[in-house]
Amino acid sequence: MVGQQALTELAKRRGFFFGANEAYGGTAGFYTFGPEGAALKRNVESAWRERFTLRLGNEEIEAPTVMPEPVFEASGHLDGFDDMLIECAECGESHRADHLIEDAVADIEDAEALGVDRVEELIREHDLACPTCGAALSGEPVEDFNLMFETSIGPGSGQPGYLRPETAQGIFVEFPRLKEYARGQLPFGVTQIGPAYRNEISPRRGIIRVREFTQAELEQFIDPEEDEPPLEDVADVEVTLYPASEQNADDGDYIQTTIGEAIDEEIIGSPWVAYFLGVAQGWYERVGVDMDRFRFRQHLAGERAHYAADCWDAESEVGGNWIEIAGFAYRGDYDLRKHGEHSEDRFTVFKRYDEPKTVERATVNPDMSALGPEFGGAAGDVADALQELAESDPDAFDSNEVTVDVDGESYTIDTDVANFSVEEQTENGEHITPHVVEPSFGVGRTVYTLLDHAYSEDTVDDETRTYLSLAPEIAPTDVAVFPLVGDDDLVTTADDVADELRAAGLSVSYDDSGSIGRRYRRQDEIGTPFCVTVDHEGLEGDSEPTVTLRERDSASQLRISVADLAAELEAVLAGDGTFADLQDRYERVDTDVTTA
Image (cartoon, rainbow, N blue to C red; front, side, top):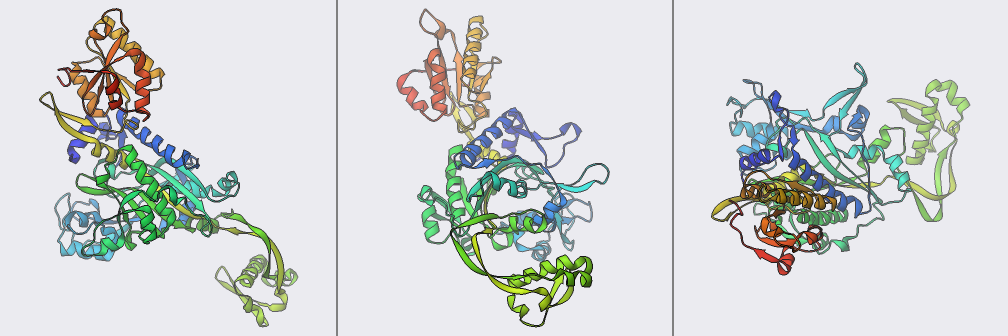
């Protein structure tokens, strides 16, 4: 297991990620992905898009990262998107209070679920001190701090807006148009990959907790009464679950089961959440997460988001700690219902009945010639309130007068003026508010997990070697090409080989600097699956030119013809073959320059 410092040093040395704005002293919580990290991140995003957008038949959008204040009033983020803040009276440094508890108290993994009052008690009980200056924090207040970045849209004070704290709201806000593209047919899914922003109180642990990060999210819109997921596709998928019941038990432990059994035994309440856990399990395994260091943990009641009826996290173990890398939430109709209440658009879909239905509907036909003179500009709102009352409580019209409330003020109307009646109507369908199931993936945390889980050391040619055993699909570079030495013929051939591989669609690194062993070591440390070396032996005589092909994890080498190289690499990298298959067909090469 690699420590955080060693992984961070490798990431900086090899261009995966490093602190941003270091020329100006750095900015906490912001990181730049270097050439290797940006390529790795793009490959993770592409793999996610292939699985959760293309293969599931979903559509992808790209919404703005800045949205006006009313969006977040409707979503609840203005009132409920908070973390616990405690400020040191001595040095003025702010800290996440729940994180201080988790770091100091061994048996508390999720202090956020405990609430502000209990966290204050624990700070006093354990006499916790400021990590910056050492001053006592006992007695200092713990307060809720809203995590959204505020901005202005337009010149001057402009229109209040916020950087989005999640990509999901961009999908929800555009639902009235997106449902048209789906022809109003449920279920349908919409994905988005892009940046989100949270003004973290105390960013820490490298790219694990930052203020700008990339999310990959899917919003699955369903009819809760009719739509069911294809559970047969994932029923046999084996998973490690850590449900809330086990977390709360004194002797609680993981449950090793399958998705199908977890549904049958009601360990996972929502079939849709269970389905996406099964899909995610296969995807994480595919991209190279160590499944012995992976679990699905159910949210405790106190940590569940305001919109979630149930939520499970995909968690990976890195550096001896468990971190959330994805969340799977059943959001119900909360988001669309709230945006429907706060906006002027319709966030519903029309559900057509199999056959028309005749139903009784309570209705009113107010005499506006009476309401207008009596209530003036409020008359229209009073009429609307009467209709709402007729639908919700028709018995209210049994007396001579009826009272309705409009904007906190009561209005009393004669029942005769309201013209209440119950009529038979034929309906072809009804407007329903879809429910939402959301798998939400943290791309940066997934990248960190893959680097941590891929970090390996072994001994080759009596020398310790560090390498990243990344899945070929997500490795930043497919293949590196080297001329063994700076001979003109070797350099020319190496250039031609690199060009041919690039033309075949492979990501190629060309390196002619330093000893061949050092070049191998550089590629090993960035996880390049294969290295191709052009040597004199491969160009001797009149026979077809050959090169050596070295596989990263085993450091084994084969001699293969240049003519066959691109096709063979394409097949292996696409998963249509393995390096072991090549070993059965090509000459093996023993060399003493593996690491020299």
